[in-house]
Length: 236
Picture 1 (cartoon, rainbow, N blue to C red):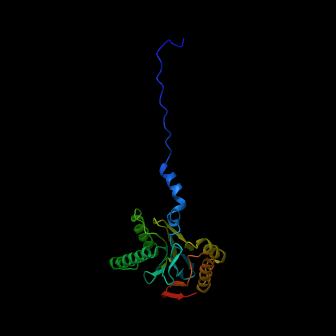
Picture 2: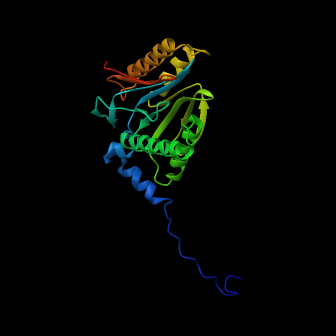
Picture 3: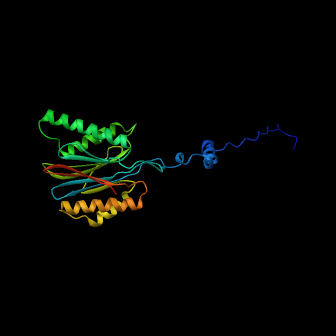
C-alpha cells in the first residue's frame, strides 16, 4: 500500500518568530540604560496642602524644586495669589504652575470686568479644569488645589492633570501626599480655627519633609479670609 496514491508534499519547517521583539530588546538593554528612562526618577516632587477653616482657606507648600535626584532650587514658589479672595497651590513642573496661575488670574480679571462682580471659587476652579482638559493631549504636568472665599463661604477644590474637579474640606498633592494627608486627617475637625489650621498644615508639611527627599527647605503659606489674602514664608 506504500506505493499507491500520490505522495503529499512535506511542508517546510516554519521559523519561530519571537513575540514583541522590541520589548525583548528593551529588557536586554535595560541594565545599560539610563535610570531616568526606566522609571519616574525625573518627575519633580512637592508637598502641597490646603485646608478650609472657619472663615477662610489656607494653602501651603514647601520650597524645594527637584528634578529626579537633583535639587534645582531651595526657594521655589508653589502657592500663588489669583485674586483678593482666591488662591491656587500646585505640585509638579514649576513652569506649568506659573502658566496656570497667570491664565487663571487673567481670566478672573476678564470675568470681573465683563460681569461686574468677582468670580466665584467654583467658577474659577471650573475654568481651570477646562484649561487643563483642553490641554489633555499636551498636558500641563501639575496637580492643583484651588481655594478661596465667596458669597457661599470658604471652599476648596482639587484638580488633576486632566482637569478632574473634586470639592473637599482639605487636600494634599505631590510626592509627600501620603504622609501629609495622614497628619491632616488626624487633626482636622469642622469649624477649625485659623490658628489651629495654620499649625495643622505646618505640621503636615514638616512631617512630609521628614519622609520625602523631594520636599523641603521652607514653607510658603497663603491665608484667604474676608479681609483679603495674607502671604507668609518660612525657611527651615
